[in-house]
Amino acid sequence: RFYDHDHDTHDDIVRESACELCPPGRISAESSAGCDPCGADRYAPAGSQSCSACETGEVVNDDSSGCNLSISFYARFASAVCLMLAIFLLIPQAAGTRIPIHDMSLTEDGVRIITHGPHLVSPHSAPPRVVFSKTEHPRLSDGIVRYEVKVLNSNMLEILNLDGSPVFDHLETSTGFVRIPFPYSLRVNAMPGTPVLFVFIIVAATIVVVLLIVDSGIERHPLHFAVATVADACVATLTHRYLELVKRSSVRLRKLQRAYRQVLLLMNPTPSSCAKGPSRAINQKQLKSFFEYFSNFIRERDMYYVNSNLIKPVTSAKALSFAELVGPRSVEWYVSHFWGTPFKHFVQSLAQHSNSLQGSTYWICCFSNNQWSVEEELGHNWDESSFYLTLKSGLCKGVAMVLDPEALPLTRSWCLFEVLQTFLLTKDDSHFMGLLMCTGQGVLNFGCSGGIDTAMAIAGRLHTLDLENAEASMDSDKDMILNLVKSVPGGFPAVNLFVRTVFRQALHKMKSNFDSDFCQVDQLLRQSSWITKSVSFGEHSNRMKRTATISDLPFGSDLSKLDAKSLEVFKDWGAHEEVMTVLSKILSLGARASASEMRRSESIVGLAIAEADVGMPEIGEVRQDDSDEN
Image (cartoon, rainbow, N blue to C red):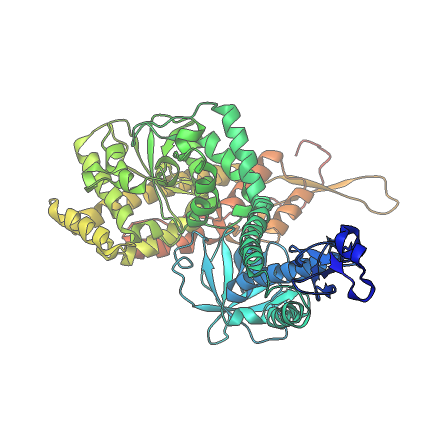
């Protein structure tokens, strides 16, 4: 209340009603004869003794009697928060962009990366340097900058060496990330055509304008903005992580892996662990099913790819071996192989082995060992390893070695260890079938005639191969196995002789089978030399028939010139179906090159192989014959 001195009377002084309340927005200070205004951004209700400030997010109303919600404040605050969130989302991209890999493979022109979604690398800047993570590839998992990438299109990158030349290393994976480290990451686009550095600068400048030039209230409420900043950082981190997980989970291979796990659970609903070693074998049907399910990704890739991109992801949920997941079986055959051999060739070779023996079970290291407990599988010493325990279990019928023309398994130390144990078991166990050499055309030991070319290539390799030169990924493994071989009677000369003897025996068997097939064909051709062909003479109704001899055909009497075109001519002359079948077999067996191949093998491995006589005498002459039976 205040007192109006200009109109005072005695009655006014006595009566309280002579004083009046200050209006809203004004207060009466002590000894004041009137009401003083509260000032900007402060309010006072009617009759208040003091002015007050509005709370955060409020603004003084028109008559300064109270506060209303400030829409402009919240708009500015929300703008600042959103801009800060954008900054936090850009920081990971600026610090080191991680691009999910859909597929990486070696092509004729170099190594190509197909990314999951647009990679946003600017095609107009210099190729940025990259590192790889979580690829499960030994050459791409050390975090060292070895490569740079060139943009081919919005979803494809080409890997280059640091000098700009194409890469032709065997880099195959369908998992992990290619990461562009700082400062090369600043060249990556935050959106098509807009580098992340440019966006970062624009957003940061906008935040400065919002917080400093515009009255945002940050100087009065720093705690609120600090809390908002921390919240932005957390949201950005979670968003970034979520987007990565969504991208990875939506990759087609991930979907296939999840679906395959469901298939395995239907076949084996309660998978459980079992002792390492001989009880963890799989059969040919399980191996074939696995290959066919992932064949579009496996293509010509090797076991390194299969293990890291297929076996480990499929078994990750249960942390078991693949054999335990599908239902393990007791071992019949131990498989020795080189991980660098194409998996397709590996499956074909074991299929040939299985067909020859009417079904078998196989102990295959990457399928039988638990890839999540590799150290436990290896044990503290070689005689505690799952490899040794399987071979010495007494259940193995023999060792199936998957060979390619380069005989690459014989260049690896652990395959040498398996050959050594095979050598010892062959000497000690009369029921042990020893070392069987498996190829995509058949088991060489069983004399598969279709594998002549492969056998000749392996013979040339064995001519110069010394098992003592075998290599291993770890020097400690190599030294241990070398010392182990040297400790047995005869050492490396004995083991080298063992391998060459097994192969020579297989080559002799192949020669015997080939000679038998060739003699059969020769006899059939001699018995089937009379072949008829009808010849039309215009309007004449009589049919002239002529006998054809082998010399009448395009390849004459020399079967080494037999080819597909000659077979068609022979068929046109009316050859018997039996003869056509045998001739087709000669062509498929590679009879054209047999003589030269045999001569070459004789000089390589010292085998006395007689060159088959493929000449055919000319018989028969042109004559008229009315018989349809000729």
